[in-house]
Structures are given as structure tokens and as C-alpha cells.
Amino acid sequence: MSEIAKFAGANLPAVTSLTAALRSLEVAAPSATAILKMDRTGHWVFGADQTEAEGDSLWAVNPFSFVHGWIAWGDGEVLAEVVESVTKPLPQVDVPPPGAKKGWETQVGMGLQCFSGEDKGLDCRYTATSVGGKRFVQALAAAIAEQVDRDQTKPVPLIKLSKEHYQHKSYGRIYTPAFEVVKWVGMDGKAEAVEPDAPEADEPAAAPQRRRRMV
Image 1: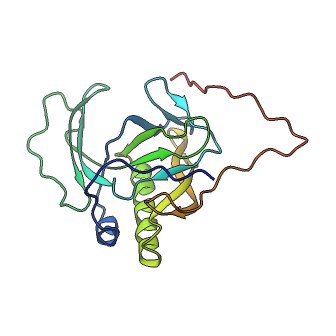
Image 2: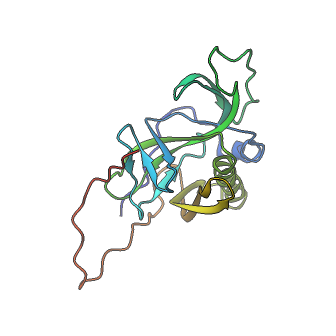
């Protein structure tokens, strides 16, 4: 069995300190390598090439990576960003930078690592300013807080990335992120892990392909 990836970073706070911070999540963002997001067609993609995440892959959410803060967008680019761990108060900001289309927007986020499949070991960051994206992050934070109350030894959720949608009267179908918790594991990587089901013997495995999406 594979072991759960060990999250980078020393001096992590005690797991017991997570509950209050996660439940008081106001609006956040984390730091990792590739940017993970859901595109307008409801597909999960990451990186500059907009590589599509495998549909059956599992992702480990780092419970210590939740952050909240502010972001200022210009014309398709980030002009400024201020984030802080949810264990600390929402950071203060001053006047937004010149050119900020909507001024300062609150955001939330977290760090994930791909646990299975072609992208295993990939570190990603997910942040959100939209209502649907914030609900996604906040729901995960709440789930982790509840799990910590039940079992402090396994605070890491292995999730499948999913989606929901609703019909907007002006913009048509709008997709929002969702998730399914497959298993809870520990930070130390010693818990038994879950691998995706192997194909049946009479079903040949499909050849691996990289998934690029044109945006």
C-alpha cells in the first residue's frame, strides 16, 4: 500500500488547535506550487497548461494549509494578495492597488496534494473568491473540524474532486466545486491508504493520456 504523502513544513501546530480555527474560517487562500481550479465547463484543471485532473484521482487536503485574506485583481492578473493562516485573524489591508477592478476581495484557500494516479505527489493550491468556491473550502474545513473532534489521529481527508451545478437565468448552467471524502488518514503517513479500484480482468486498461484543456 502507498503511504499518504508527508506534508512539507516543520513546526506544525498541534492537531487539537485546528478545530476552532477551521470553524471560524472567514474567507481564505493557501500556498503551494500549481494552481488548481474548476473551469467554466466544470472540469478541474491545474497549472499553466490547464491540465485536467483525472476523474478518479484522490487528493489529500493538508489540514494546516487553510488560509484567509484578500486579493486584488487587475485585468486578468493578480495585483496584490495578502493571506494569513486561519489560526490567525483576517489580515488588515489598506487602499487597494491602482487598477484593481473590484478593489480588495476576500478569499479563502487550502493546499492539496494528489495522492493517486498520474499526477501523484503534485502539490496544488486552491483559492476562491466566488460564493461557490468559498462554500467548497468552508465545507471541507468544517468536515475536518468535525473529524478532529472524533479522531485526532486522522485529520487528513482523501477526497475525490467533484462538481455541482445550478441554472442561472442570465449565464446558463453554472458549475460549482464539490468533494467526496473517501477516507481519513493521519499526518504521519502510517494509516492504510485507499487506491482507486483496478479495472476488471476482462476490461483492458486504457492507455494513459495527458489531459490538456484549451481555455
